[in-house]
Length: 376
Image 1 (cartoon, rainbow, N blue to C red):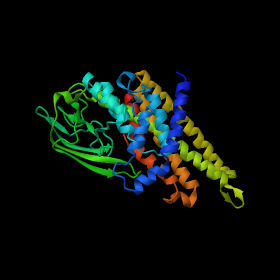
Image 2: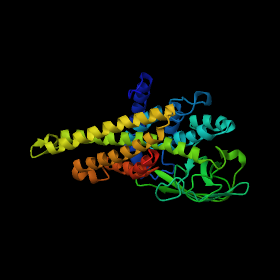
Image 3: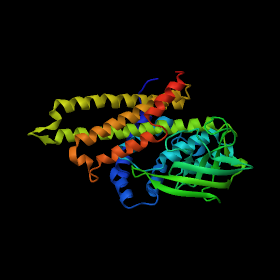
Image 4: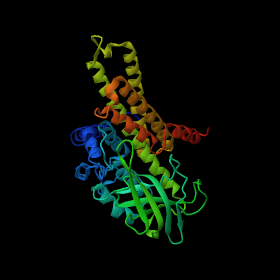
């Protein structure tokens, strides 16, 4: 499979690049943070994104979306990373849609997918329960017919969600892959308590407490007790698209740093002429190109439903997390003192790189998972 974008994908990418730069630049994220915006993103802008097909990028055309697949979602995410755009794309348009496509009933798909694609419905995915990503460590229990009790952490956009997709243990022990079931939950239902939190990158997540929350059989997503099949697919979708966003973060941090190296003078010369800085920039350029290749290959594998897609997801997330860390570290260092100030934008890229790297598993988690999937 060639690592080259088609003409349609190139046009889609160029449209996303223009829109993100004009409507959701870094200055918008700064304003949302400084204004203590309750949503953490602009709903009118999200509606515009939906009109461009962003909210329905994974949704098939028969369900009201554009069906542009994971490559399309990755192209959008890369531009989001370059501009640090605050949107519910990852939580609703990727995680929730992936869950419904993999395990949703015909009725769930018919009702929910068009609303998501139209930007009228936000769904948050509530799975993690530990400080660090441990997908099968699920203590939330479903008892009887059916009552959910437990606590979910790091629920992206959980404070604004119209629906939640919650993983719960219906059998087995904590840590077991078997015995997990996914449920649709109304956040306004009795027993649901949502506490908003702000992460280091000024994005929002939520802690969700469930106490005897009543759900029904029609709320089950996937097969009862076999929800890990859907859970794995959802997390891989999120990891792949998040890797594309980390690529955008690294690219933009690198390009801003190159511009600064060409402009900043020290001892009467441009600092970009210093050989030591040239070597560091050349190394980083090569690393970013590697990330670009592995991210595109991973997105293509997910679209083609290749058997090795999960291994490629691990490779992409590990490499993108590491290179985004290096790129943002270099950016702050090469900008010198101004790189450490809040008034200068470059620090925002470092914060986003750190938060995104930890989300759904950092490079160490995915190095271990890659080894397991490869039989080592």
